[in-house]
Image 1: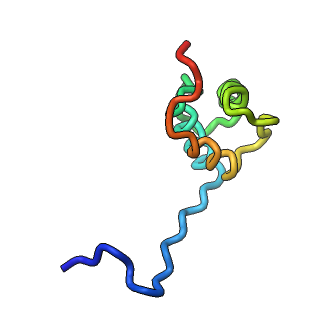
Image 2 (image 1 turned 45 degrees about the vertical axis):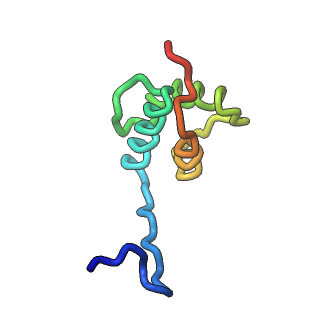
Amino acid sequence: MALLTPPAGAVPAAKPVLEGSALVMEIKKELKRVGCHPGAIDDKWATAKDSLHKFAKVAGLSSVPKQPGSDLLDTIRGKADRVCPFE
């Protein structure tokens, strides 16, 4: 019989920390999911700028991050549905 809950005292597995190209690609994937990134999912941070401006405007962010970060990724993931309008 398989256990559906971890045993008492078990430590949950940590989320993998994304960095560099993997982080940029994950941010773009999430921006696409919320309707803010129409472009390709690649590892080029510079091509995410327009999408980030769109997201920041509709999500009420005070500024657009200059570098990718896990906080930005978490903020985008926090949106359950599309936030950018259809173009």
